[in-house]
Length: 133
Image (cartoon, rainbow, N blue to C red; front, side, top):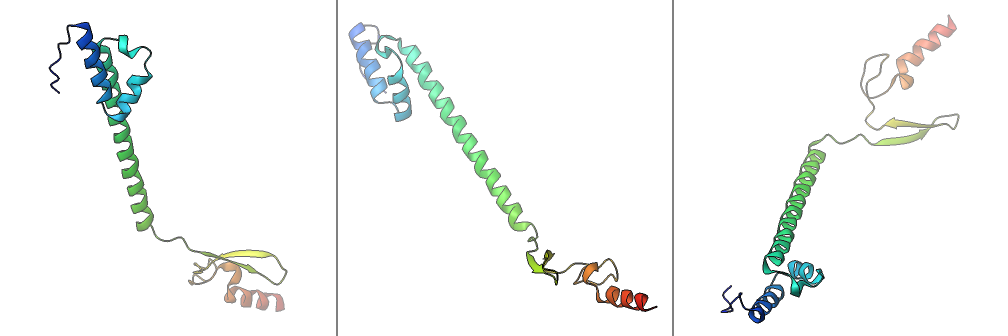
């Protein structure tokens, strides 16, 4: 920015500082205005503070981008992952709440899909035959 002011004279240096602060980005301006006696500080000090704000802004922007990428990857993994089988609560004859997977599963007794060992008809039939003998 060309101002036509000579930074060597005290009056024009004060005007230059005021213009620098007033025409800065909002976050830089707020930071500079918070400094104690910013009018009495050198222009180099004000510039260093402004650079700190810019660096911090860039870091926050980078962190925001990283968070967005991580969220996108998690969303992609969630979509690509096989859906969790929903569970259905059932009560057996004794009134005990039993939770089973909706799609059944594999029986460890007969090896067929669609039920569990505790519900296996072949096992129940075999147990009845064994009790009768």
